Image 1 (cartoon, rainbow, N blue to C red):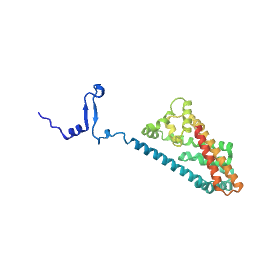
Image 2: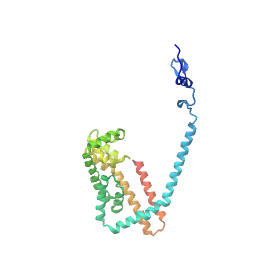
Image 3: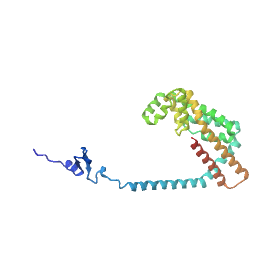
Image 4: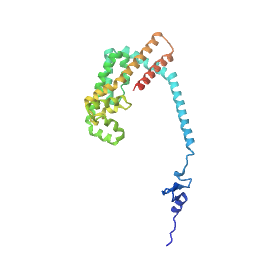
Length: 276
């Protein structure tokens, strides 16, 4: 009986040659690639070009980022401060009393977390208007209510949130750990999530689905947000003093005030991230 090799067999014979003895006569077979078109036969000659292309992209990215930072410092920052921040401060002082402004800030900090909106602008206004002590008390009181509302709303959709977390097990593994262990462990986990870059606005709704109790959730949230609150208060107070000093001096150099405010904010932010 005669065996007729098919085209597929001939192609495989052209691509590979069976080695009976292997390297060094160890008895293991191997395959020596002979075809240049086979994906496994491609050498590492292109590695140098790939490394050069990677470094080129890195350098270009750094250059573009530097240009953007220069544009922000020279034009965007001073323009925003002169046309945005200063008019808002003047409008608040002339329109609202301190009592009305406190109610507006308290209400925004209470409602914004329920609609997944950031609370930093309201914290900024609180710092510029009421200073460190009263601003901190106003913020911490409003935040305690603002993070509690999503927690209780999330309890109404407990099973739906569980299904959503099951669809993304890797991403949900971090917040699921917060519900394990004792109450003190839950408190520490929640505080760590607040300090970390995790989007805690979403966590407000998901916390109840991870079986975190309300007490550890609230205390961990308040403790974890203290650094953010102090940084916001410090930045807003410092920026407000700089703007007010420039306005009192009657300076017409908008860039000077812009440079001072932006430098102050960036320095504070970098110090905060370095501390964390």
